Image 1 (cartoon, rainbow over the protein chains, first blue to last red):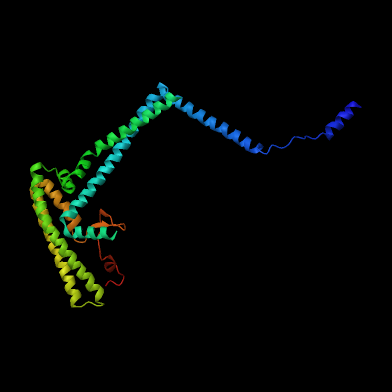
Image 2 (cartoon, rainbow over the protein chains, first blue to last red; image 1 turned 120 degrees about the vertical axis):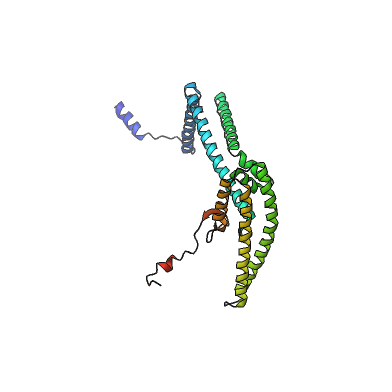
Length: 109
Length: 177
Protein backbone atom coordinates (compact mmCIF):
# COMPACT_ATOMS: atom_id res chain seq x y z
CA UNK A 1 0.00 0.00 0.00
CA UNK A 2 2.74 2.38 1.01
CA UNK A 3 4.68 1.55 -2.12
CA UNK A 4 1.62 2.34 -4.21
CA UNK A 5 1.38 5.75 -2.56
CA UNK A 6 5.01 6.45 -3.17
CA UNK A 7 4.67 5.37 -6.77
CA UNK A 8 1.67 7.65 -7.21
CA UNK A 9 3.41 10.56 -5.56
CA UNK A 10 6.44 10.12 -7.73
CA UNK A 11 4.29 10.02 -10.84
CA UNK A 12 2.45 13.17 -9.87
CA UNK A 13 5.52 15.02 -8.72
CA UNK A 14 6.46 18.05 -10.78
CA UNK A 15 9.57 20.09 -10.40
CA UNK A 16 8.65 23.63 -9.55
CA UNK A 17 11.97 25.37 -9.96
CA UNK A 18 11.96 28.60 -12.00
CA UNK A 19 14.09 28.41 -15.20
CA UNK A 20 17.36 30.31 -15.05
CA UNK A 21 17.27 32.77 -17.98
CA UNK A 22 21.08 32.98 -18.03
CA UNK A 23 21.62 29.24 -17.97
CA UNK A 24 22.83 28.85 -21.60
CA UNK A 25 25.01 31.95 -21.44
CA UNK A 26 26.68 30.82 -18.25
CA UNK A 27 27.39 27.39 -19.76
CA UNK A 28 29.08 28.95 -22.80
CA UNK A 29 31.05 31.32 -20.58
CA UNK A 30 32.27 28.42 -18.50
CA UNK A 31 33.33 26.53 -21.66
CA UNK A 32 35.26 29.52 -23.02
CA UNK A 33 37.04 30.11 -19.70
CA UNK A 34 38.15 26.48 -19.65
CA UNK A 35 39.32 26.66 -23.28
CA UNK A 36 41.26 29.84 -22.64
CA UNK A 37 42.90 28.53 -19.55
CA UNK A 38 43.91 25.37 -21.40
CA UNK A 39 45.42 27.48 -24.23
CA UNK A 40 47.37 29.57 -21.72
CA UNK A 41 48.42 26.38 -20.05
CA UNK A 42 49.63 24.97 -23.36
CA UNK A 43 51.49 28.20 -24.16
CA UNK A 44 53.12 28.09 -20.74
CA UNK A 45 54.17 24.49 -21.31
CA UNK A 46 55.70 25.36 -24.70
CA UNK A 47 57.50 28.33 -23.16
CA UNK A 48 58.88 26.19 -20.35
CA UNK A 49 60.09 23.59 -22.84
CA UNK A 50 61.70 26.26 -25.00
CA UNK A 51 63.55 27.67 -22.03
CA UNK A 52 65.00 24.37 -20.94
CA UNK A 53 68.69 24.26 -21.86
CA UNK A 54 68.31 21.14 -23.96
CA UNK A 55 65.79 22.81 -26.30
CA UNK A 56 66.80 26.47 -25.96
CA UNK A 57 70.31 26.05 -27.38
CA UNK A 58 69.37 24.39 -30.70
CA UNK A 59 66.33 26.69 -31.07
CA UNK A 60 68.53 29.78 -30.59
CA UNK A 61 71.13 28.46 -33.06
CA UNK A 62 68.45 27.69 -35.65
CA UNK A 63 66.82 31.10 -35.15
CA UNK A 64 70.16 32.86 -35.55
CA UNK A 65 70.94 30.90 -38.70
CA UNK A 66 67.48 31.68 -40.14
CA UNK A 67 67.93 35.37 -39.34
CA UNK A 68 71.38 35.37 -40.91
CA UNK A 69 70.06 33.84 -44.14
CA UNK A 70 66.89 35.97 -44.27
CA UNK A 71 68.72 39.25 -43.58
CA UNK A 72 71.44 38.42 -46.13
CA UNK A 73 68.92 37.55 -48.84
CA UNK A 74 66.79 40.60 -48.11
CA UNK A 75 69.89 42.82 -48.03
CA UNK A 76 71.26 41.44 -51.29
CA UNK A 77 67.92 41.89 -53.03
CA UNK A 78 67.60 45.45 -51.77
CA UNK A 79 71.22 46.19 -52.76
CA UNK A 80 70.68 44.87 -56.29
CA UNK A 81 67.52 46.93 -56.65
CA UNK A 82 69.39 50.06 -55.55
CA UNK A 83 72.24 49.45 -58.03
CA UNK A 84 69.71 48.79 -60.81
CA UNK A 85 67.94 52.06 -60.06
CA UNK A 86 71.26 53.91 -60.10
CA UNK A 87 72.24 52.24 -63.37
CA UNK A 88 68.99 53.46 -64.92
CA UNK A 89 69.58 56.94 -63.49
CA UNK A 90 73.07 56.96 -65.03
CA UNK A 91 71.78 55.89 -68.44
CA UNK A 92 69.06 58.51 -68.25
CA UNK A 93 71.66 61.15 -67.36
CA UNK A 94 73.82 60.50 -70.44
CA UNK A 95 71.20 59.85 -73.10
CA UNK A 96 68.84 62.71 -74.07
CA UNK A 97 66.33 60.35 -75.73
CA UNK A 98 66.08 58.06 -72.74
CA UNK A 99 66.05 61.06 -70.40
CA UNK A 100 63.15 62.66 -72.30
CA UNK A 101 61.20 59.39 -72.26
CA UNK A 102 61.75 58.92 -68.52
CA UNK A 103 60.72 62.51 -67.87
CA UNK A 104 57.57 62.41 -70.01
CA UNK A 105 56.64 59.03 -68.55
CA UNK A 106 56.99 60.31 -64.97
CA UNK A 107 54.92 63.39 -65.89
CA UNK A 108 52.16 61.16 -67.28
CA UNK A 109 51.99 59.12 -64.04
CA UNK B 1 56.27 32.78 -16.09
CA UNK B 2 57.34 36.44 -15.97
CA UNK B 3 60.97 35.39 -16.24
CA UNK B 4 60.15 33.23 -19.27
CA UNK B 5 58.30 36.07 -21.02
CA UNK B 6 61.18 38.44 -20.29
CA UNK B 7 63.69 36.00 -21.78
CA UNK B 8 61.56 35.51 -24.90
CA UNK B 9 61.10 39.29 -25.37
CA UNK B 10 64.81 39.90 -24.87
CA UNK B 11 65.65 37.20 -27.43
CA UNK B 12 63.24 38.75 -29.93
CA UNK B 13 64.86 42.16 -29.42
CA UNK B 14 68.31 40.64 -29.90
CA UNK B 15 67.23 38.81 -33.05
CA UNK B 16 65.74 42.02 -34.47
CA UNK B 17 69.00 43.87 -33.79
CA UNK B 18 70.93 41.04 -35.44
CA UNK B 19 68.67 41.24 -38.53
CA UNK B 20 69.07 45.01 -38.82
CA UNK B 21 72.86 44.80 -38.40
CA UNK B 22 73.27 42.11 -41.08
CA UNK B 23 70.92 43.97 -43.47
CA UNK B 24 72.87 47.22 -43.01
CA UNK B 25 76.19 45.45 -43.44
CA UNK B 26 75.07 43.83 -46.72
CA UNK B 27 73.55 47.05 -48.14
CA UNK B 28 76.29 49.37 -46.85
CA UNK B 29 77.92 50.24 -50.22
CA UNK B 30 74.62 50.87 -52.01
CA UNK B 31 73.30 52.92 -49.10
CA UNK B 32 76.38 55.15 -49.02
CA UNK B 33 76.19 55.53 -52.83
CA UNK B 34 72.63 56.80 -52.44
CA UNK B 35 73.84 59.45 -50.01
CA UNK B 36 76.50 60.74 -52.43
CA UNK B 37 76.10 63.96 -54.43
CA UNK B 38 75.80 62.03 -57.71
CA UNK B 39 74.56 58.54 -56.85
CA UNK B 40 74.41 57.51 -60.52
CA UNK B 41 78.15 58.12 -60.88
CA UNK B 42 78.76 56.11 -57.71
CA UNK B 43 77.15 53.21 -59.57
CA UNK B 44 79.70 53.71 -62.35
CA UNK B 45 82.54 53.70 -59.81
CA UNK B 46 81.23 50.49 -58.23
CA UNK B 47 80.37 48.67 -61.46
CA UNK B 48 83.57 49.47 -63.37
CA UNK B 49 86.08 49.46 -60.50
CA UNK B 50 87.11 53.10 -60.96
CA UNK B 51 90.04 54.53 -59.05
CA UNK B 52 89.70 58.02 -57.53
CA UNK B 53 91.65 59.51 -60.45
CA UNK B 54 89.51 57.79 -63.05
CA UNK B 55 86.40 58.81 -61.17
CA UNK B 56 87.30 62.51 -61.06
CA UNK B 57 88.17 62.48 -64.76
CA UNK B 58 84.86 60.83 -65.62
CA UNK B 59 83.07 63.22 -63.27
CA UNK B 60 84.46 66.21 -65.22
CA UNK B 61 83.45 64.63 -68.53
CA UNK B 62 80.00 63.85 -67.16
CA UNK B 63 79.52 67.48 -66.07
CA UNK B 64 80.53 68.75 -69.52
CA UNK B 65 78.24 66.24 -71.25
CA UNK B 66 75.39 67.17 -68.91
CA UNK B 67 75.25 70.70 -70.37
CA UNK B 68 75.08 69.33 -73.93
CA UNK B 69 72.56 66.70 -72.85
CA UNK B 70 70.22 69.30 -71.35
CA UNK B 71 70.27 71.38 -74.54
CA UNK B 72 69.61 68.32 -76.68
CA UNK B 73 66.76 67.29 -74.37
CA UNK B 74 65.09 70.69 -74.74
CA UNK B 75 65.45 70.59 -78.52
CA UNK B 76 64.10 67.04 -78.60
CA UNK B 77 61.05 68.04 -76.56
CA UNK B 78 60.44 70.95 -78.95
CA UNK B 79 60.57 68.78 -82.08
CA UNK B 80 58.50 66.08 -80.40
CA UNK B 81 55.81 68.61 -79.54
CA UNK B 82 55.92 69.94 -83.10
CA UNK B 83 55.51 66.40 -84.44
CA UNK B 84 52.58 65.74 -82.08
CA UNK B 85 50.95 68.93 -83.24
CA UNK B 86 51.55 68.22 -86.94
CA UNK B 87 50.07 64.72 -86.65
CA UNK B 88 47.04 65.95 -84.70
CA UNK B 89 46.31 68.87 -87.03
CA UNK B 90 46.89 67.18 -90.40
CA UNK B 91 44.57 64.34 -91.42
CA UNK B 92 46.96 63.27 -94.20
CA UNK B 93 50.71 63.21 -94.75
CA UNK B 94 51.73 66.55 -96.16
CA UNK B 95 54.87 68.69 -96.22
CA UNK B 96 54.29 69.92 -92.62
CA UNK B 97 54.09 66.36 -91.29
CA UNK B 98 57.10 65.22 -93.35
CA UNK B 99 59.11 68.19 -92.15
CA UNK B 100 58.19 67.53 -88.52
CA UNK B 101 59.12 63.85 -88.88
CA UNK B 102 62.48 64.61 -90.50
CA UNK B 103 63.38 67.19 -87.83
CA UNK B 104 62.40 64.69 -85.14
CA UNK B 105 64.54 61.96 -86.74
CA UNK B 106 67.55 64.24 -87.22
CA UNK B 107 67.27 65.47 -83.63
CA UNK B 108 67.21 61.88 -82.35
CA UNK B 109 70.30 61.17 -84.49
CA UNK B 110 72.10 64.16 -82.93
CA UNK B 111 71.16 62.86 -79.47
CA UNK B 112 72.41 59.35 -80.26
CA UNK B 113 75.64 60.76 -81.69
CA UNK B 114 76.25 62.78 -78.50
CA UNK B 115 75.60 59.71 -76.35
CA UNK B 116 77.99 57.58 -78.43
CA UNK B 117 80.71 60.23 -78.26
CA UNK B 118 80.33 60.49 -74.50
CA UNK B 119 80.28 56.70 -74.17
CA UNK B 120 83.64 56.47 -75.96
CA UNK B 121 85.13 59.34 -73.95
CA UNK B 122 84.15 57.67 -70.67
CA UNK B 123 85.30 54.21 -71.74
CA UNK B 124 88.74 55.58 -72.69
CA UNK B 125 89.29 56.52 -69.01
CA UNK B 126 88.52 52.98 -67.85
CA UNK B 127 90.71 49.92 -68.13
CA UNK B 128 90.47 48.20 -71.51
CA UNK B 129 88.35 45.36 -70.20
CA UNK B 130 85.99 47.54 -68.16
CA UNK B 131 85.76 50.04 -71.02
CA UNK B 132 84.64 47.31 -73.43
CA UNK B 133 82.10 46.05 -70.87
CA UNK B 134 80.81 49.60 -70.37
CA UNK B 135 80.45 50.27 -74.10
CA UNK B 136 78.60 46.98 -74.61
CA UNK B 137 76.19 47.71 -71.79
CA UNK B 138 75.45 51.26 -72.89
CA UNK B 139 75.16 50.20 -76.53
CA UNK B 140 72.86 47.27 -75.74
CA UNK B 141 70.61 49.25 -73.45
CA UNK B 142 70.48 52.64 -75.12
CA UNK B 143 71.73 52.70 -78.65
CA UNK B 144 71.22 49.34 -80.38
CA UNK B 145 68.56 49.84 -83.09
CA UNK B 146 65.12 48.61 -82.15
CA UNK B 147 66.16 47.83 -78.60
CA UNK B 148 65.24 50.08 -75.69
CA UNK B 149 64.56 49.66 -71.99
CA UNK B 150 60.99 48.58 -71.56
CA UNK B 151 58.43 51.01 -70.07
CA UNK B 152 55.72 49.19 -68.15
CA UNK B 153 52.09 50.36 -67.83
CA UNK B 154 52.77 51.99 -64.46
CA UNK B 155 55.50 54.11 -66.04
CA UNK B 156 58.48 52.28 -64.53
CA UNK B 157 61.48 51.44 -66.64
CA UNK B 158 62.86 47.93 -66.75
CA UNK B 159 66.19 46.73 -68.02
CA UNK B 160 64.63 43.91 -70.00
CA UNK B 161 64.97 44.51 -73.73
CA UNK B 162 62.29 44.09 -76.36
CA UNK B 163 62.86 43.36 -80.00
CA UNK B 164 60.64 45.84 -81.82
CA UNK B 165 58.79 45.49 -85.08
CA UNK B 166 60.38 42.33 -86.44
CA UNK B 167 58.55 41.72 -89.73
CA UNK B 168 57.76 38.05 -89.00
CA UNK B 169 54.19 38.41 -90.25
CA UNK B 170 55.36 39.52 -93.71
CA UNK B 171 58.05 36.84 -93.95
CA UNK B 172 55.70 34.07 -92.91
CA UNK B 173 52.64 35.23 -94.87
CA UNK B 174 51.09 32.32 -96.82
CA UNK B 175 50.85 34.36 -100.05
CA UNK B 176 54.62 34.77 -100.00
CA UNK B 177 54.44 38.52 -100.60
